[in-house]
Amino acid sequence: MSTREIPRRKTGKGWFRRDWRLYAMLLLPIAFYLIFCYKPMIGIVMAFEKFSKSKGIFGSKWVGLDNFKFIINKMPDLGTALKNTLLLNFMGLIAGFPMPIILAIMLNEIRCTGIKKVSQTMLYLPHFLSWIIIGGMVLQIFAPTTGVINATLRKWRWIGPEENVPFLTEGWPWRIVYTLVGVWQSMGWGTILYLSAITGINMELFEAARIDGANKMQQIWHVTLPGIRGTIVVLLILNVGQMMNISFDKPFVLGNSRVEEYCDVLSTFVYRAAIKNHEWARAGAIGLFQSVVGLILISTANFVTKRLGEDGIW
Amino acid sequence: MSVSPGTLPAVKRRRKNPKWSVPQLVLIFVVLLISLTCVVPFLNVIALSLSSKSAILGGAVSFWPVEFNTKAYEVLFNDPSMRRSLWLTVEITLIYTAIAMVLTVLMAYPLTKRRLRGRKFFNFMALFTMYFSGGTIPIYINIMELGLLDTKWALILPGALSTYNMIIMKSFFASIPESLEEAATIDGANDFQILVRIYLPLSLASLATLTLFYAVGKWNSFQDAQYYITDRNLYPLQLKLYNAIKRIDSADVVSMDEGATAVANQVSESLQPATIIFATLPILVVYPFVQRYFVSGVTIGAVKG
Image (cartoon, rainbow over all chains, first blue to last red):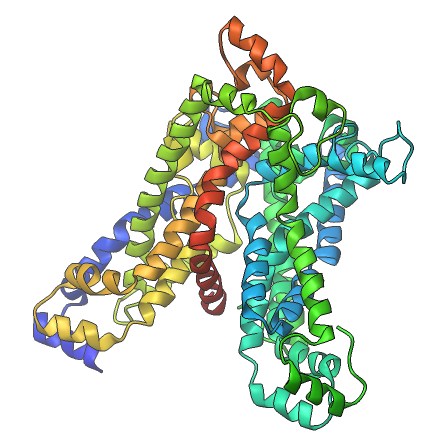
């Protein structure tokens, strides 16, 4: 109501004369979006070109689907990278998704606020470290001879005095370390959303459950979990939508030449194809494939959840 | 988390000592144990960075330095390339955060005004970038065409507006009562004045949150430098750290004259942990003070986003 009165008083009619200052504010951010987000979207056409850096996006020759045929038929490592991406993401989802929920429920049950705060402070810490720092620590801690874990296992005589557990140099141990480090890094930060969702649950429901004779476990199962179901579902959709995306830093820093077949994922594959081997157009084609599949995944997950009667993300 | 069988004993115990029942103590023990795993690795790395080479090679170091010495840190601080990298990272983080905050506020504020024509279009324009992007390589080509490769602007400009943070800012602005704006308009203030004199002073807490989001993100960013920077003089700290822990080009990690190289050999094993601590220290120092800001930011972003 009142917003309509403002223009009449100031300028009569003319929304632009009234609001030009707001549009002026938008100029810079919109320029940012156009230059750094939308211009690269046009650049995607390079995936259909025999792209050369000197000729640029508009000067290079159009070759249709040749790049896609090439990456499917002549880049056998791409299949491995795709498999690793999906497998590592899947392991991360299975191991990592329930952890923040469990932790949030446990934190919520702690009655001493001091202890709760202290443990939250510790739990959030890994979220603020770069993967390079975390990777460096992992390499130190899991190192064969000098690493504290192997040293401890030797001290406790779980392994022989000269033996080492090949945490970082063999396929499955590496995958497990990768997954656990991911869970470790994100579990604390992940509790924030669940904790705030739990706070939103009506306290009378707990009261009613207690009067009905429900014990703590039953309260958690019948009140807390249903109360945060919406949050769980939304986060699950977002996670499923990210199945094709894998960060660059984490596999890049944790991986090494001994586990090449296990640690090569789409992001590192694209990096190598482009920066090291100068296969620009083909790397771009892989990226486009990834974006499109990602968009399909998230739309499908969203559609399915809505069909199941939950609120989706759009 | 064991559960008492009947309600009566539980009630009795609670009345006697509400905070410290047995299940509560077990729960606290488990949670603290999990929490400690987030801190303990640091103790190990700090201990390594302060131990002697022979102790590390013998696998004798766990959570306390063995044959304490600070030589690794002396080597690091005396290394001009490390100092340069540190200052460069500080500079980039500061410029980036300033630009990002300006862009975020300028985008978020107009989008909260329901009278603005084209608001939905601009909103969609921002949101769409959250679900679809050009991809790494077209973005790289874009940076190349803009002539930003191997300049510090390649690390500053490309991520200088995060749609996610912009949504957080928007929801903060939207929570400020419109009556304030109306009153100011009647007093003759224009949109710029309303933003600077009314909205910004009222959102200091949220501005702090976003500043920290941006600053930590930039401090920790690595991929952009790995892609866009080949000039060693422009290596930010994370890239330098990466080279250090992967022992890529160790001469580059610590560049120095020959006398110093001998010292470096003595500390070769503690140098990596020392570098890790060196790059983490700024975050560890500010972390306890800023933690609560982050938490409020996440919650609001999730509710509105």
